[in-house]
Length: 307
Image (tube, rainbow, N blue to C red; front, top):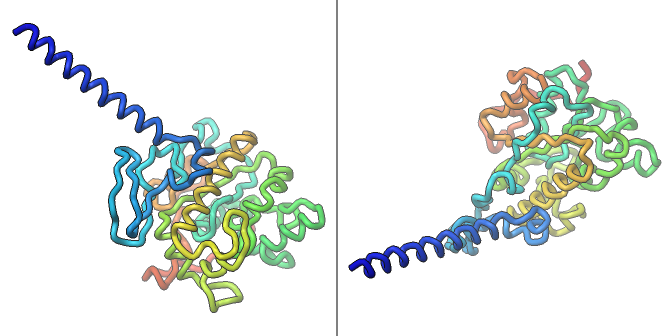
């Protein structure tokens, strides 16, 4: 009888050990480095629409029936689709200017611009003021002339949208921006990929009102998003994920910069921004909602502000 009991206990211990080791191995394989994720971005997210969907916990696959995109359930700190709230508390309220949005368009840049304007900072959004034109064009001209891009284009406290549909300074000239402002605070925003894709396909603005922002992106040739790419959510998600990895790596290599990551739909975003920048949270509100997608129109926000 004792032999049977001992045998049963030994068997249960072996089963538990095997189960535990499998769990640890799955977690180790799931939490890959950002460099590895940059090489194989599909490790980081799950595709729907008839494609296999890999669970980051169990390693199983399943079939989904729609064309939407799912970022999966990676650990928060390792995901390129989730903001990291790891800014040291000691840095709050002491972050140096300029504040530079290194994120993507249609991801809350107007809301951030309005926030810094409300906080009595000079701020630019898309346009850089009289005689400067679009910030992207102005900064490109400055670099060609070997002049500092920020100082040449208004020297604002806050730069909340430098890019335009065909040129992204936060991608193409990050080194030049760093050389001019080595202590700048970078801001990186996050948004649901399906919502971002939808917004890009519905937003029509600027001089050419015949095609959407998404169509313009596919016609451009941006580093990480070559011509012909960007028409679907998977292309955009891969582009965004790699950009997030590049920004995080750049800041890791240049620790003089602080990186503030913001989840645009976080209900506590206003409170967190107040703690970080010292601007009252009542200044935080989502601006520039597309009337095609939303029933509520926001007040028009000036593209430049001077307190």
